[in-house]
Structures are given as structure tokens and as C-alpha cells.
Length: 618
Image 1 (spheres, rainbow, N blue to C red):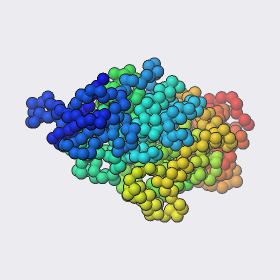
Image 2: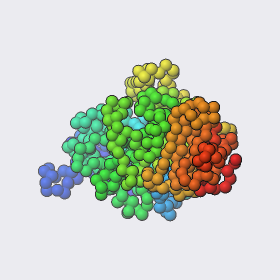
Image 3: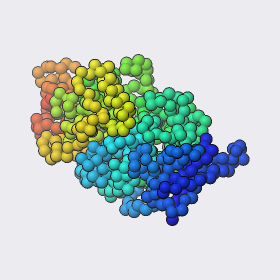
Image 4: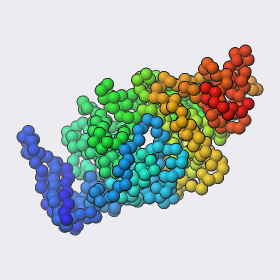
């Protein structure tokens, strides 16, 4: 048995690999190019006998005493500072040979953090809960980052070994077992990957080559080098990493974290290069693969085809939809919510995807965004959500939306507006039953100085915003433990009822073709955001969202309202589902017009069939 070791270290005059306790000199690989000058590619290689699966190894640069982990380490069993371990992808036995993936269009996603999804916090424990997701109607599970990061628990966005699954979660084999088990249940799996920065603790990439550049400033220090000298290999490092997750771990898609923080002034942007590479791998494997971007830019070029001059990604997160829905439901107006809250803003989010599409952003103090071509861009290219890890975890106490709403009925209203919107919907773990556990910001940095800086920085951040309550210490183990889901909740009221409501909505979305119509122009929204229309003549807030023959009528206020059912031929609509048993039809609610209306109690929602399906309670 033997193993081949390779590493890119262009500035080194000598590189050794230490494997199994012995050092072996590595040879410089020729570039194979006449124009390369010295003829060296910067790559070093060595074949080591008696090294195989399970052998620990590392690299030594220029005869130094320190043994560094492999920049492309496939396995880090000793943590981010320890040696790497040889891992043979061919040894794992997959059972998903008949899996060909799922299209993103028509899917419902579920965002999951492995460490807090179950008390055990492992891939194997998460497998035991996959049947819950199947019963809910989920199509794809999106994992928060699993690349090896410092300590035992954390969000994963400070990963430093981008090729190695986090060992406390179960390492490489544990991750493969999870993906294999998900595919066996018909679930696609998406991985959140971070290419805009690396964590500070254990990050030794800069020792090997020009992975970072001071030419661009970022919140995390020097930027990842995607467009300066030596960047070709850095770009290849990222593109090949993405392909590795899709090919070797059988992931169905990748969520690209904060792509607005990726600086690349080259003629072909890294995102376009990634899109081309993934499309080629998809064709080669005969399997659906997709890329989803998180971006703060409100730039439709991300999801515009490469033929039309875009980057050709499959979807992007829609923060504007979240902000508009959250602010309308909660009444919050602080921070970036200052530009949202009116039902007209929510209407624009439903029908135009971006609220800021070149308009003035008060929060930013400038104009922001660019219009979406609503006639050409399919709605499924935008991910809609009411909660996610950022929007919950970046609150001071990690409180979920259920703790913010004036009425619990608004949870059902929010779920209906999310799951029946034209976008690809995503739920955050526990959202489906109204989990009462918070989801806090937590870390487990082993460097005392870094740990102290994170804890103090968190407190300072919220004190500047006027937060007077307690800010949980990210480094406290209890902060992490409080964030673990309580799986006793879904079996008891009122959580079980809310879980059933989510199941009904997802089943309805799947049963009606118009609810998966890709055209943004196929959604019509009517809003009422003022006085009148209420049984006792108080201020009323309601909206209707019509998609084909399906109409969602929602009352966001706390008093009953009489809502006209939109569209011609709506005199005898049918009820599909309702959040409150007191909801009823008023066939002649608007007098001489003959148009039907629906009576909605406070904080309630009804889904109507304008074609007149039976089952309406009068």
C-alpha cells in the first residue's frame, strides 16, 4: 500500500511530507509550460509507501520544525491545528446509485444546523429525524457549513479546513451516511459553503501560498485572492472544492455564503466559473446539481443565464422578501427594517422579488439594487423565507419570530404567505412547529484571546444599538445548549397543530399547479393598510394574494375584517384551508356588486379556490 501526497507551495525551496512519523522529501512538479520561466508549477509531490487510509500526515516547509496540516486535508480528526489524515473516498459503499437528484423548481427547502438539530449534534443522530422532514413534505435539506472549524460547536462560518467535514459531527463517513440516508428517503441535500473568507483560528493557508491579498479589504482582514498574482491556483482551489462536495459526497447543491463579499475584478467572475464547472459536472454525472447564492446586492445578474451575460446561478436568497414579511407581521422597524413594514412594500416583494430595485434605501443612505426582469426571470430563482440562521441568530438573544408576534395566529398567517408565495420557500429548523428554543450565536474558540474578543465584541455590538437586555455569551456552553431543538414539542399543543398547518400548506402547494407557476407576473396582490373594512370600523390591515384560481386572504390586524374575494366569477369560491374555524363566507358582502367576501377574525388566513371547490362553511 502507498499514498500519493501533493501540495501547492510556490514560494518554498523545499517541502517534506511527514507521514506515519517519518519525513519524506517531495519533488517539485514541472509546469509543463515553456513560458513558465523556472519550469516549476509550485506543486510538490511524493509517493509514500506504507501510507494509506487512516495514516496521519502533514507538510514541512523549508526544513522548519512545525508540521502543518494539508490545505486540502480530507480529514481532521485532531481538530483544526492537528495533523491531517489520509481518507480514501472509494472505500465508502453508497446505496444511492438510482438517485438522479431533484430540480430546485417546485422544491421546499429546510435549513438545518447539525450541531443543534438533535441533542447528540451528529450526522447519525440527524438521520433519525429525516422521516419527520419527509412527513412534513420537505424536498431538500440545506446544511449549515460542516467544513472543519475550531472547537466542538459553532455556526461553521469560521471554517478553516474547507475539504474536511467537522469531526465532532461524525467526520467524512458520518456525512456520507447522512447524504445516503437522505437520498434513500427522496430528500436532496444542499451544503452551505463559505468562499468569501476563512476563520482566523487554525487558518494556515497563507503559509503555503498567496491565498489572500491585501489589495482588497474585508471585514475579516485580507481578502481571498481571486484576481491578483497567483490567483489561478486559488480559484482552482475553490472550484475544485465545490466539485468535491458534489462529486465525492453526493451533495445535490451548494449554497454560496455572502457572495457580495467575494471580490473578483477578472473578466470571468469566480461565480461564473463555478456555474460552468458545476453544469459540466451535472452533465457528466447525469444528476441534477444547483448553486444558490446569498447576496446583499439585489443584482439579478446572479441568476441571469450566462448566455445573456449573467453568472448563470440557479437561485439567490431574497432578503427583501424576508424583511417585508417580517416587518409587516411584527411591526419592527429598527435597523434594516426601517425601509419595510407597509403592505405595499410586501406587495412589491411578492410581485417584483426585490423591494430595493434601484430605489432609495434609507438604511444604507443611498440607492440600492437593480430591477428584476419579471417577464423573463422565473420566480423559483429566488428563495423566500420567514426565518433563517442569520435572521434569528443575529438577534441579541437569538429569539425566533414566535416570541415577537403580538398574536400566535400570525405564525399561521406568515407560514401561508411564505409557503404559497411564488418563490422557492425555505423553513428554518423548528419553524414548522413554532419551536420555543432560541437559536443564539455561539462559538467554541480555543484561543483565549480570540474567545474573549468575540464575547466582548458581541456585547459592544448590541449596546451600541441600545439593547438593554442580557446578551448571551457566545463562548458559554449554555448558550449553545439553549439553542438545541426540543423534540418533545412537536407532539404537544399548540406545536402539533402548527406542525399540521405547515403540512397542509406544503401538501396544497404540491397539489395545485398554479402554486408552482414560474412566472412572477402570474401573482396579483391586493392590500388594505388603513381604516375601514372592519366590523367595528377600526383600522384594518389585510391583503389577498392571487395565483391562478388560488387566493390567499390574510388578516394581519387584531380585529375581524371583511375581505373581498378578487377576480371575476368569484361569487361562489370554495375553501381549501383556513387557520381559524370562525372564518366564513359572506356571499354578498359588498352589497350590489354581488362579489363574495370572506370574514376573517384577527390574525387569521384563508386559502380559497376561486373555481368554486366544495367544502365552504357558511
